[in-house]
Length: 134
Image 1 (cartoon, helix red, strand yellow):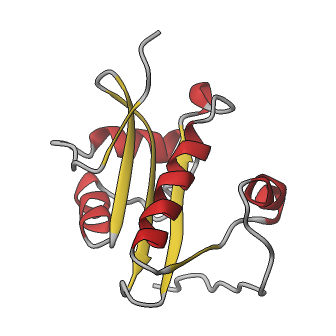
Image 2 (cartoon, rainbow, N blue to C red):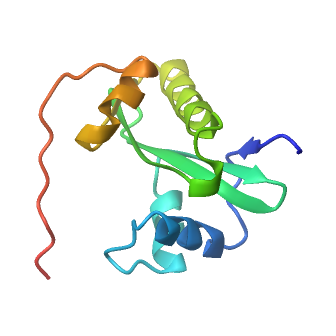
């Protein structure tokens, strides 16, 4: 098995990212490839994980580049989970934040808290969300 390649280079097509989101049940907003491309390009920092030509993971940071960077969208294809890919993505996102003196923060669902604690994060706030109504 070849090593996973991590890159910040935008993929030529976001079709694989759409498949990744759909495999995880993350496409409740019916996002298109164009939506996902815009999402990634407008992020402060994005990293992609590939097994040869197959996108198997992704993560990004939304930030003003000065104070806070919100880590979001960290995802790994189910067949590739528990292999250290998510950790490697988070480590690189945190490293980019730290290199730019930006505080890395993230939100996650309650069941994932132990995972992120194991990566050095600690609970500091209560997050809230609101559904889109139109």
